Image (cartoon, rainbow, N blue to C red; front, side, top):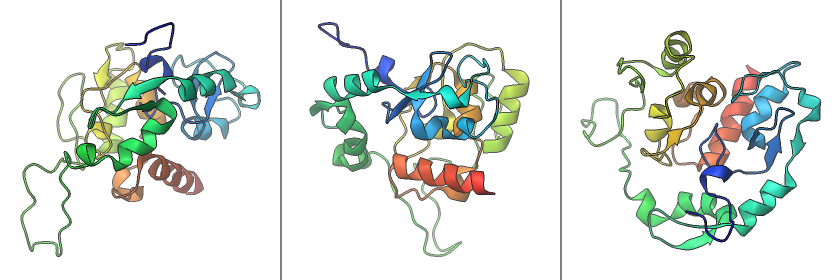
Length: 213
């Protein structure tokens, strides 16, 4: 929890990537996102805000230096080692903290059938709907299903795709899961992602490649 008037970590968390703001950009409707997260929307003539769905002018989206300053001045603790640091340093620390990374087992098969996949390796191929429990949905099917069946559901849920990733937090609930899905998971992770890369470089590369196709 924040003290002394400091903003909470939740208030400085992007609703798309569920990470601390990186180069925050605020739209004309007043919502703020990481620059790389909102970038696909800014390519459109009349995009909808991922949070409130209001149409905003992409030309008037601006860098939010006030929030950027708060990220630099606010401190938090690593969930793995407990070390305190500014939130600005937390993202890079999380990708290298040994106590965080070793909680996620790595598996690299040397041949298609040379060894069984350990049961404790997360399933990154299919997912379960966090609203109704429907199983065996791939990334694109989960996006379609949630938009068709749960668009008006305001329940805060954990993103099953993000939580399966090495950098994912299985306890972090998205304030707007549908908006998060529509911006963050329009592409298939398995197509673009190097699971050894950190989250920031992964997202930038995935967005770049998905927009170029």
